[in-house]
Image 1 (cartoon, one colour):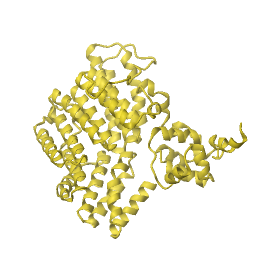
Image 2 (cartoon, rainbow, N blue to C red):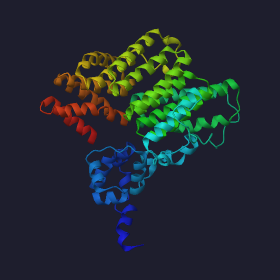
Image 3 (cartoon, one colour):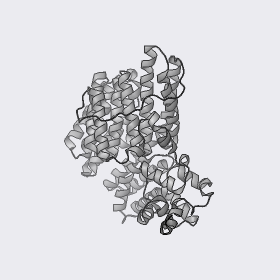
Image 4 (cartoon, helix red, strand yellow):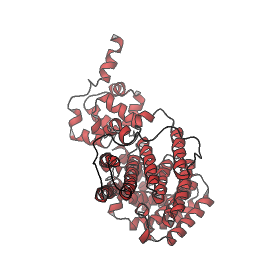
Amino acid sequence: MDASNGGSADARQGHAVPADAWEQPEMRAALATREISAVYRLLRKHGVSQRQIAAMTGQSQSEVSEILKGRQVMAYDVLTRIADGLGVPRGYMGLAYDEATAIRVVGSADGQQAEEDESVKRRRFLAHAAQVTMGAAVFGPESGTWSAGPARTPAPGRIGMTDVRQVEAATRALRALDYQYGGGFCRDAVVAQLSWGQQMLEAHGTDIVKNRLYVALADLHSLAGWTSFDTGLMDSARGHFANALDLAKQGENHPLVANVLYRMGRVYLHQDAPNDALKLFQLGQIAAQESGSELAVSVLCANEAWAYAMMGNEEQAVKLLGRSKDEFERANLAEAESWVKFFTETDVYAMVGTVHTVLAQKNAEHTKYAIPALTRAVESYDDEMARSKTFMLSALATNHLLDGDLDHGAKVGGKAIDCAEGIKSERVKDRMRPLQDEAERRRNNADARDLADRLNAFYAA
């Protein structure tokens, strides 16, 4: 070994970190929630310098400094590099699955896709979605496959409807945990259930049983995609949603195809790519209309409105909100497919409020539409929908600040933080950024300043 590289090599091997550092409760909690800023602060308490952290993780000292100040780390490849560089057992950060079994369950690991530009990944998924929905590559040739095939582990010899119902029941229970506590709370359990469920594809069963199994596993893949999205694992989300599309199509379930496309579109909205999101919502609209489900059409229209609002097209956004409400009123809720039953009257108000909140950030006149809709949604969401309620509280507080009602805005913003503190979700933090921005702009007001300080503490914690 070259002597000039010895210090760096030693640092990379983790010699600077005390052997018991990873086992302490505070550190384990920070690792479990992937709060890298907290991990780095705890390492500093153990006497590990910023320079040593930078050497071990392959980051610059300025990057380490930014993370120490609260910058979030969500990219899977960066998280794995940090874990490996510091010598953290990957399982402590919930990373072991993606590396060891993604090829078996999902088809491609985040690390394998990390070199691709995000826009290229979006185009690949759009092409795949178009093929599944329309049978043609509308947005360009679809390259590669999304799945390496069923799990090559011992599978049940024969399955019946009871086996499929067990998958469905597990999915319902895990989805309830996701709604209430966030994807970070249950994603590993979802993936474990999916790994077991995939084995059933190799088993013998009647056509009716196998058809229902395709749909059940599609829904479970969709939940795995949603919880991956909620924890910031975008490539895993994309892989799960792609598999969900294939299985839903195989099970001939058009409403579920529409639902998966809606969810992946939401990922792209979150990534500030409304044009690509809109294309997925429009593909979903085709599947929704084929299914004859007014409720599914309502969901897609509401999300198309959100995409248009982000693109600054106020006229189309408002028009599609109106159509969403009309389709919802026509829908037979009692006979709706389970995949769209989540979309209740409360969610209609939530979407109206969300779309007008986006528009209000460019034209404050929209607060008069956003505030009553968001207020109605907040009042209707119970503790089982804690994440959605947090989103709405944050948006409501933002609108009150935009409307000049700083005292009330600060109070509602405080409630949003109270709710957010009990949820393991990267999306909650991201969706609260507009509230933080508006509070910071009004620092000359004591209430807004207190809210801004509390938000900063929330992000730094």
